[in-house]
Length: 60
Image 1 (cartoon, rainbow, N blue to C red):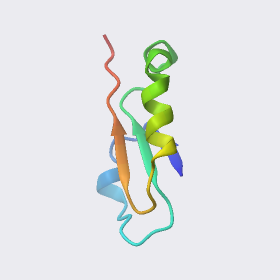
Image 2: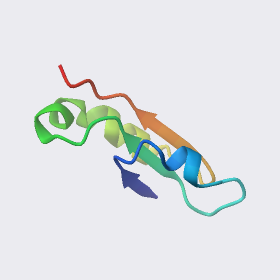
Image 3: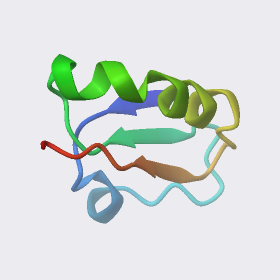
Image 4: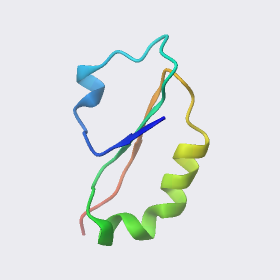
């Protein structure tokens, strides 16, 4: 499992058939990520190899 803020990774990597899952945070700034930790944890816990999941984190 890879946790990243690189929103372009979906265009750079083909995960099909891979043994890794990718979770992408929509924003990497802690004040915006902190209240979204339950959603981030759920995305990490349910990540399936070969897939990419976006966690939408607004900057407002």
